[in-house]
Length: 587
Image (cartoon, rainbow, N blue to C red; front, side, top):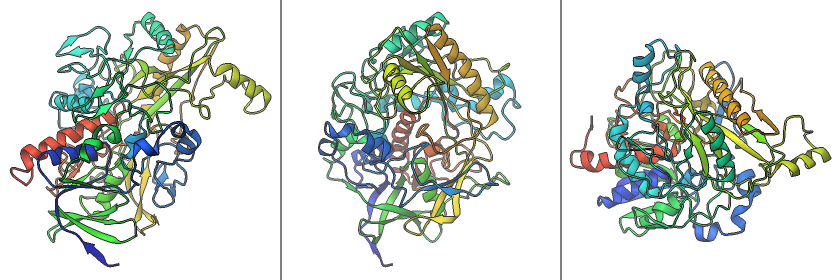
């Protein structure tokens, strides 16, 4: 195949999601000529996602219209190295996006910060419980940056995405109405918190009676019209549901399409090229300097795009795969524990208790992706784990996301799975149920990793990424304890019935759980256990930056998107203030 070589740009950014859009904006604001390459199709929210068509649950949620096209590229999966990995043929457990705006275009809006404890978990747990408290095969590690250093960048991201909430810790002073266990904030949220729903009020009453402090969870759906940090107007959420797996028709849910790209498109020194699938980061003869990237365009042509700075800003899986395909960094070997690319892959633990009433009715179809009432006493360093025997934690919440009609049909245990009695139970319980949800952490382990599959290839003939993962006893023990706490809350609501989901003995890639995959190109202070340094700069190739969920050394309980956006702000600042004035290793 003949390769076309184009004129160089100052910076090429791979991916137009949360990281790619913010990195492009910040680097363009610094005066660089920035090119963003996106493998998915171009999107105009004002024409592509209009009412009532945007609420087509069959098209978007069931048939995966805006998600990754698995017929061209997928991953292979196995629970352990003794199994043969097979390709994922249908999206289930998670849903990576494939369009301008990336995966964040269909996120629910969970915009929580990680806790200070989460960034120093190895040090903090060892200090409190001893070095042998972690499971022997656990590879969890400190991030190399503290919450205090990250805090201004959390604040920056929240003012780009218009996050709503109430501060629980303002400059070290605990505030009424917020999360008292969060890290200190330098100022209030940019938008007021969501209003509690009847379901949330019932949860809050039960939680308070049990000694917890409930609060409204932070959300990146506007609680009022909001003009963001980039002077883009986002409109107030109308609580129509259809958030997760859908693009917001109101422009109320912050994502790259609504919060960043409208301002970015106006810049003369920025260009976005959709339908450009990057397949390699190119390096010079020494392998120590990136010279640009190679991509396949919409017509199937191979194109070389030279650039002075390369930023990988794609989903967790593709950041890792591009490094492996490009031969940058040593691939991880689980047998020896050596190597770094693909190391510390992790997912996220979840669970739910369904609660049913005969004497209460709600409006479940009214809601938003992250309208929820939460508690955080079971998370971070709040709980004493000495007698519990597990590392990690969870926050518990009662969401009112909007009960979409196809997938939102919970019925009590013992209900027939089809037929007249099932239909009767669905009709009776649709307005009489709520969920108490567990959102838990997941540590990283030596035997859980990402690598290139030796057998299966994508439409371009390149090896697929292989995922090796299963639930660990540590997370199963943590989840069992969390279920006990959730059942206590459920009972305090005095329902007619309730039931908890079973604790999974094996991880299954089939049912949807969350799109919170992390790791594979983790950050840290030691090149032998990390791919990038504290500024998300490659240890091996100084003008290459790998930013996103791939940098997380393990998965805390909170959703990852707020921290992914924060890392984009942090890495962009490092490039502008340290790398551009003096190119080379920043550490």
